Image (cartoon, rainbow, N blue to C red; front, side, top):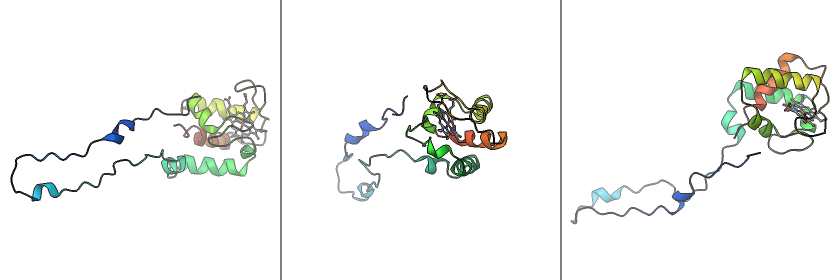
Length: 142
Ligand code: HEC
């Protein structure tokens, strides 16, 4: 369950202001390049919506999930009854094999992969829709 990504930019926080003034002398123009690079901006991880909002797999899968009963047991980034989608995406690589595997588990029901609480079967769900939902789920990888 590695939801935290090691920070890669902490070191930059103390970056010194470059004030090196090469040759002495009255030349002014060169130093006028006031940098507008933010120095201490806390870099917020982009939301999944920001990352994938344009991806049709994301949009279609999310719409199907919202229309189904999934949200009563799953959230994108928080475990409720079932694992969060982000946890699922962390565990299963996004490939055809896993899309098929997970789609069939959603249709047939599952237990034992994440704990003792079973996920009920969804016999009314088409394989196509289940696969589309999983394509969305597997995008949610940090
Ligand atoms: C009544 C609660 C409930 C509902 C509704 C539900 N789930 Fe689950 N889901 C669970 C639980 C609990 C697990 C963990 C099962 C296990 O440990 O094997 C799970 C597991 C999963 C997994 C991971 C399966 C694996 O083998 O690792 C996926 C993907 C998933 N659910 C997607 C969905 C989708 C999509 C829907 C809607 C169609 C849905 N779930 C509806 C409770 C639910």
